[in-house]
Image (cartoon, rainbow, N blue to C red; front, side):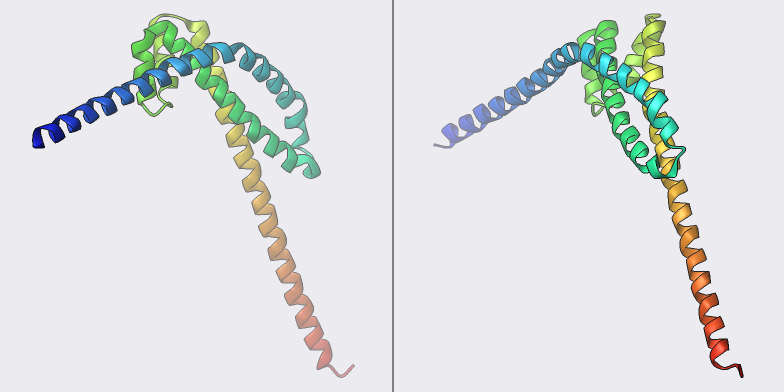
Length: 184
């Protein structure tokens, strides 16, 4: 009976191991397949959103009434740009380093695919791919930094208004108390 139980444990261990390998295989080749199919669409969307960002949303951040809308929209766009960068880096890694490079990039928690894609483009002298990746990464994080700057600026403005209001309240209360005790 003990032999049957230990054989069952070994078989279960093998099945779990094969299941993990199957999931990893599906994740790697599935994400590559999806990236190849999704990339042309993402290129179009990224191009359109870049034009909208430059010519509409950035100028709208000048005006106080439209600043929050523009900042939130730019922040959402930055995530679409980030997805585009990740997909483009995955394809670049596949073209330059093959499946092994993709596995290494994905093992680094998925975010490692971008540095591996940059490295692959540099090593293979694909400077157009390298420049495109740098551009989309700079666009993604540049927009996030700009939105963070706008949020901090708005937070400082709100704090200044609260301080001014508090000072006005204190001034009014001292004037009122003075006038209550004056002989007038």
